[in-house]
Amino acid sequence: MTIWCPSLAGRRGPKYLQIAEAIGEDAAAGTLPSGARLPPQRELAYLLGVSLQTVSRAYAEATERGFLKGEVGRGTYVRDGSAMTAELPSASLARPESGPIDFSLNLPAPSLAAEALAQSLAALSGTGDLASLLDYQVSGDAAGGSKRHKDAAAQWLGRVGLEARAEHLVLTSGAQHGLLVALMACTRPGDVLLTEPLTYAPITAMAQRLGLKVVPLASEQEMLCPDALEAACRRVSAKALYCLPTLHTPTTQTLDAERRAAVAAVASKYDLILIEDDVFGFLPPKRTLPLACFAPERTFYVTSVSKSLAPGLRVGFLHAPVALTHAAQTAVGLSSWMPPPLMTEVAARWIEEGTADRLNAFQRDEAAARQALARASLPVELVQADPHGFHVWLKLPPGWNPEVFRMAATDRGVTLLAGAAFAVDPALNTNAVRLCLSHESSRVRVRAGLAIIAELLESGGEGGALVL
Ligand SMILES: Cc1ncc(COP(=O)(O)O)c(C=O)c1O
Image 1 (spheres, helix red, strand yellow):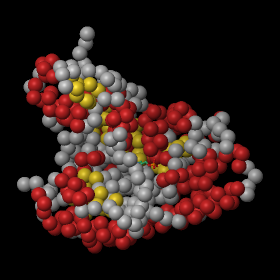
Image 2: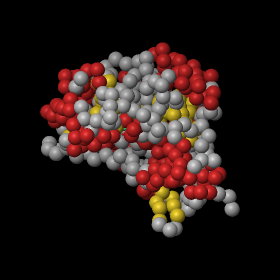
Image 3: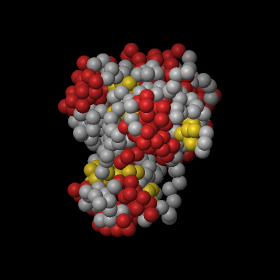
Image 4: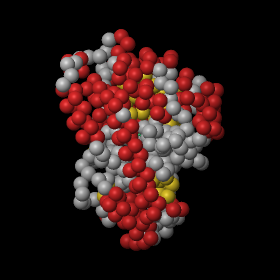
């Protein structure tokens, strides 16, 4: 009988964390099926050439993260998949006027979108062609969205400078679905997906579910660095890079045109597919062209209306490389047939009638107003933010542990995420927390939450929060 042994090749950081990470990946990929018993610690220690204590710590860490469960006297077992996905943040959309102030979710500000929806639904109910919105729209050219809806999408993508061609546009159920579709279209189990060291966490879980190996770029710089990308491409044979070149989550940074061109050049040299997440791309009033404009032949451009109009519409736009458009349309068909036509109809109408521009402008202005509050409330030297972004990457003064800061903020009534929530490599040290300003119901509550954060920073370790 062969004994399961984790592959530690290419991993960095403490050995016990490498092993815990490998357990999580193998469990997600099914190499370690639910209920499987892990090798006795002594045996694994021998196989890996590490101490028994290292394996004990690794099992404890993997148990803590929800990958394993231990049964006294019976050994250590892989937990079922539901326990692993339960770790993903669950979005609660309630935006109460009292209670904890929520800086943890990167959602658009409450807007007049509901009124616009009421009008659109009333107008739609008077048209004669509702039946077509109740049909499958998957035949021929219509796969992944009807021609009119795609034309509207192409018009909308023109706002960010992308000359989208309707034949390479695929409509998705939001950007999350677009990312899954892009991964399904261009990877096979076992492929390597590169990411920035800090990134949008669901991409890692998604990639692992598809059996991909996720490799973060070296972490000297927070911003996507062409040299680090080249070094990674030399080290591993990677299939694709997932990145957020505009208003990055969580660091808020935006790549300039020069860096975008350099990233595109490296991608071309190593035949790497680029998956560009531009979900915040509609916020800046003036912006650099999408990465897709620099490498159209190899870039999946993924965006949605979630941050600019309303997330509940679940409408996303994917612009695919010529050679992979068909694969992307097939992936949409496999995963959902199509986004709900009623929703793409509403989005198309909003784009055609100018409602989308108005709602987007509202989000842009509200984001700018809330960012101004942050600049006025927090020590400027600690604030890393874009004047038009939804979030702030708050650098903590030396001595603070972000997780301890998060817990102290929660105790004081403000929820937020510590930097580790975005680290692909759990051993990566971050000294920052993310504050999302857009989700809260009003600027009054944002100001109140920022005051609590400012006080906490000033307290410099009150209540034992300072790590010496
Ligand atoms: C960086 C990033 N990418 C993608 C998504 C998914 O967005 P959507 O609601 O369009 O699925 C989100 C949502 O929070 C996000 O923050």
